[in-house]
Length: 344
Image (cartoon, rainbow, N blue to C red; front, side, top):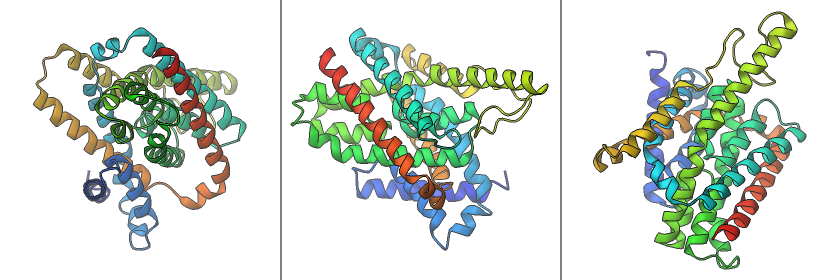
């Protein structure tokens, strides 16, 4: 733990700074601020040597282990009753949005020739729940830290732009409170960004947005399990071709001889927390404290991931990854808008 201490301390300071930014500008969610501050720390002349040197092990630990703990606690925000209460038409709409966004983004990313696991991670972030989903899937796929950081940066940027852009479209698109809330919940990435965007449409819009968004979060578990199954299959195929277990896929850092579990432990914890919340045994005070802890853990993890962003590397693929972000944004916003019109 001694080697991790400098980086974890820096991540804690980054979280404190993100909280201060959110307090000063409430429209900027803490998680968004944490990513941006991590990126800034990695490029400031005074901090850059620290981030790349003595603090790197702890920042990497924050980006991996604290991310897993935060995702486990994220399950306490979900209740099966809330999801069922949305109605089957809305559930079907969310499933269609997630499927179309994931497959469309993955296809486009591969056609654009983006390196490593970036197509997979961006597709995950846009279709499920932003940086949290990217962190979860990267754990199952064994993605390179650089791919994770670039994907988080893109999804965070686009989600932040949605906070400003979507409220301007509510009236031109003729959306009432319920319709606007469901559109936001189905199309915006991180939970904090959903809240920041939907609250502009009123209390009804905020409630609908959060419920639809949490329905998307539920799909995180089967998606991670599916990625883990694909990784195991690729490992077996590589072993059959080479006579020994080889590389998993381009850009993947899963070690030879390893076999990721079909359901990673942190995903099992996530599902267990959903069941626990559904039982109703936890008092609101405990749920509130767990929610605060979850946000702090994810903020520290996202600061760590942001600090791994290397802007010169991103610039080299900047046009392609920006095109992927724009294309995916059009898909998720367009499909979710059509779905809302059909189901409300």
